[in-house]
Length: 327
Image 1 (tube, rainbow, N blue to C red):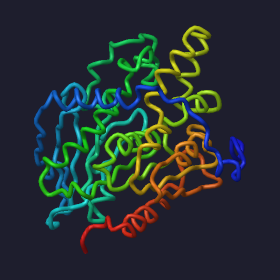
Image 2: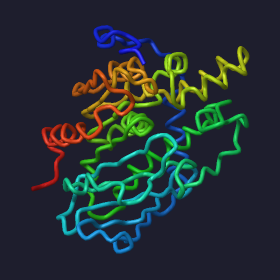
Image 3: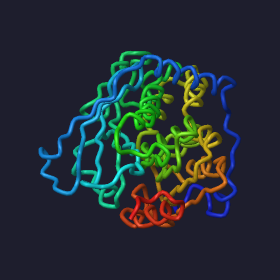
């Protein structure tokens, strides 16, 4: 991978015009209103003993997502911590799910509660019941239902992610006024979508190397990863499905969510990232509506970004914004 798809100075000023559907806001208002109208209970069951954790309490959570369908999550909290706790809602990278509680011990070690949200169809615990809708040519999730915005896979997944934040008010011991949404790659793109769709419920957003941004650029220049599913799809269905495909993707572009997000934001980018090319990350960052936005740049990083070095930066950044647990 070359140093960058653009030089660093150009990236700082890269603010492309990305077409937004005229009914973008109405589409998402309708989508979320329909999901919320379905109702459904938020349920939590304590499972700590099963995982042999002595300093962390773990609940197995189910909350209503798309179409009211139950979505799985883990809720981790430091044992004996005084409520209410700030909570980090974590979304997962492409092809992964919530995994095991022992995969997610960092935030509870730092004193936070953490809600780890399963990705429908990608994880083991939340099926994608809408998988038969729309396009049947699908090697992965990027083309599932891409024939229309109503059918597209990410409509369901992004709705789940917003509903995870909705569920926080029904989970005891959490501070609904101090909600941080976070994730890497796909998880970062999902965190951006929630920050844009529910800005009044998000206190901060931490998108690392976010995926799902500036699709029209990403599909043309990515050298690896899930965007290539769309490239291959369009290769076989050009020219008649090119514009209809991008017209669908426009409803799910992180650039548009960034334009609607106002919470403090800590982005990161790898300038040698072939999966989420830096220009796609900067397209979202440079359009971000919130005045408090920071980009952590890893000049020689690929899609791994800063690895563990990001951790201390995140914790310090949140503390500076009054979002650390009480000491």
